[in-house]
Image (tube, helix red, strand yellow):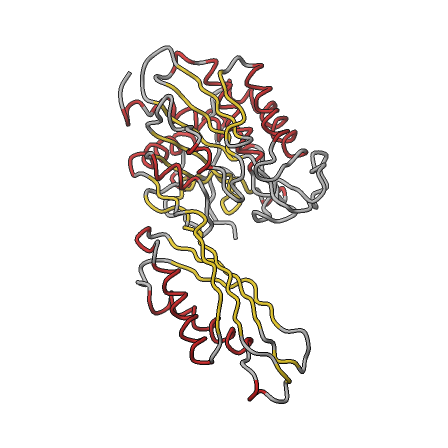
Length: 406
């Protein structure tokens, strides 16, 4: 659902040179949209990024964590090192939009705005390279693969993208169709949730549906587990700590008169509080083990952590908020309590250096551009591209007062 804010976007809030970039931003975004690629397969995307960086004379390195690219823009004046992160992978979705720039890759689509993130980062790189005298220090722009899975942030960190030169702080944005165009969602602390996953197989004993006494019914055991795990959030977690346990898959049985010997379920856990990191897996297994024991069944459980929660540094969140207020220029345009149980591997960067991840509203219902993320008709108002560049550039220009001085 789109949050009902009524921002006003004034022309003078985006500088003329960035307005002049808008056509190129749209062209880059649409070129990327037509050639989407899945995680760690973003070779066409990386080639386009490198092509533009070479054209603009920007120092860069390719092939980081397979397909990642890092651009470095140095000012003529010393100062902090600020990183800007943009993810660039697509999703295994068949696009249903009837637009000239629709995906040309069958079954793959930019359905989450990463094509826009890459275009915004490229536009920021170009502008800063032309205005090195207007900021201090160094800007490192990280074009990251595989955010949608299995995760490219951690391999890029392991490859050293936060060193040489060492990054002092990092920012990133997500075009967000849960907010209308002209809004920015930013807050200190938890913005997005941790993502943990599990697969569980219940091992019972099959038999005839008319002779249940001879069996251990894996479906009955599984059903009790499904109900019981909901008590983890309802009765074990502090009500002030938001959390979700969802079982999204349950498969068992082949015949209406056959009691299934095995049942398989899979699910996800989401939470904001980092202190809960080791809790859910342990509690989930306690519940599964207890129910299985009471029925004489056995189980196999595979539990893994995908991404930690996205936790924004307070000072960096204030920097972004102050810049967003200048760009949007209306109190209704900055949404301070915007949160989601969705996850993001930007969290790995934020564990290493202080930073801020924020949402840039991109929905426009009047144009039909308000389908949710990961929908086959997802698209966004491209006016947001110039706004994203303006916000990034202002953060670069202003950050010296937050971290250091020229």
